[in-house]
Length: 477
Image 1 (tube, rainbow, N blue to C red):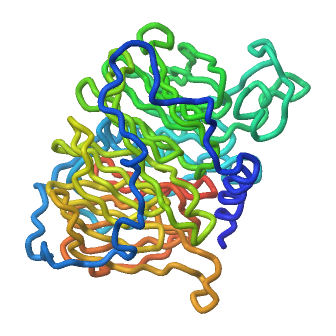
Image 2 (cartoon, rainbow, N blue to C red; image 1 turned 90 degrees about the horizontal axis):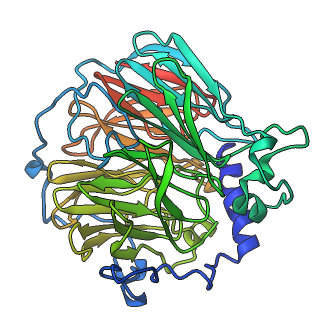
């Protein structure tokens, strides 16, 4: 098992032991104030992987020759996780050979106290990165020159209680992250998002901040009662973030982060150390939770439109117990597409929440949608192309899964993909980058990066950016 993956999974499994991998019966996500509870899924609508084929396979319904991708365009920015609020950027352009043009150390890498969990964002020629020590930095896109940095600190004066050091205590009260000197300790989770000249920052220290994107000056902050686990999503004057105890919160970006509404999902503290983000389309917010819940909410008031859950009934490995939707759903052309790391990808009707199709294609990444096709990397190292319309598997490329395949030891984790000018790009925890033909799955190039990559690559201005586990930002063009 890789060095990064050991603590990554140890934390999750330790939490499983503490909680019994159960939800709290006192929390009822299907109840709420008022009649606007929408189409609620009962237990019979929970998806079981046993209902599906247990192995992802090509079915021949759609052939590689039928793959037609949208026209290539150059996206100048990547302002939020997933590229935009719907997490769909289609067919982004990259005309160059994707050779390294520069690299830069951007802060503290993953360690026992914190992890590189959030991908960077890009806006107006500036790259914004959060490191493992909850410090946010801005760099010039052209050559990686540092512009400013901001260290997130939460002082004793902002807290009401400092007792409690167990995992459960730390989840219930982020104030337990404060040490005896009044300075914050370590917070895991959160990320950054850019909108309208403001950089919004969610933090595992239990604070949402708004920074001036040009100077890094703090504009306002909002303390919340629990650590913020997700990266923020910013849309139509609202900031959405999900807490460690599976509560989505809507903040008013125009009123110093005033809380507009909240929705409590099923509490399940066992999760992957990733930073999922809600997806937004028009006046609907689709929120992912570590329990495998997927809930569509009214952006205006948090009323439930529909809800369902992704789950695996198998327990072949410890990870099969984790139903986490690790990086959030995608909203595209009337579909909501989500993957749970436990082993399932499902497409839902955006309006009604009805399931359209499912495949055993679990992932800790976000599916990439381009036109009528979906590209994904599964937890067992398969890169696959699927039809968005019916879930038909068109091709599969099996990548290396273990560093020691004969002994099945040292599992390799793959991140991505991004679609960059008729090329799929993925990166691995073993420090390799694969460039794959999106039309037939053939490998174009296998390249050494040198450092472990655990977060998905991004693309802006024909440049692919990789953030390594050692907090090195690599620009490829």
